[in-house]
Image 1 (tube, rainbow, N blue to C red):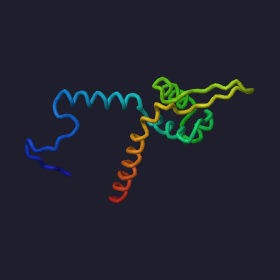
Image 2 (image 1 turned 60 degrees about the vertical axis):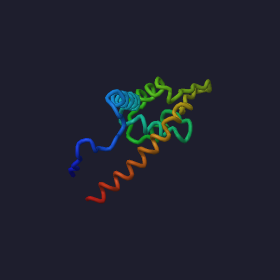
Image 3 (image 1 turned 30 degrees about the vertical axis):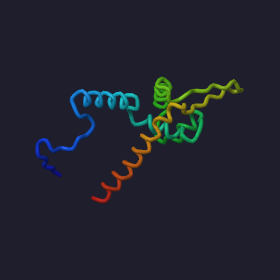
Image 4 (image 1 turned 90 degrees about the vertical axis):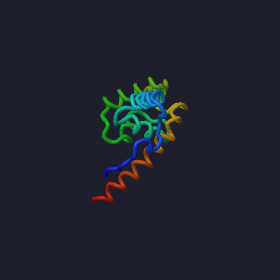
Length: 127
């Protein structure tokens, strides 16, 4: 689909000028860098119902390998979205849970979920 827009009549979007545009691009790149990959958001969603042990989380996030889950959890810890709790029980129990900071992603995840459902419906309607 092609849209014809007369010069100067395009709607304003994120950045009104070059500096704002550059700052917007940098902010989005930073966010995507932190949430990069196909597993980080599913892990966060998997932990949204409460703390989980490693294997329990692996079952919730269908298809993820133990190696990848371990790597992703470490990165989520570094970025302060997840905390690893070690309990001195016998045997030792380790649980992962979301931090308060991870709640800053709630509206983003909701927006992505809504957009994903709308996009899927749109594409399926064309089939």
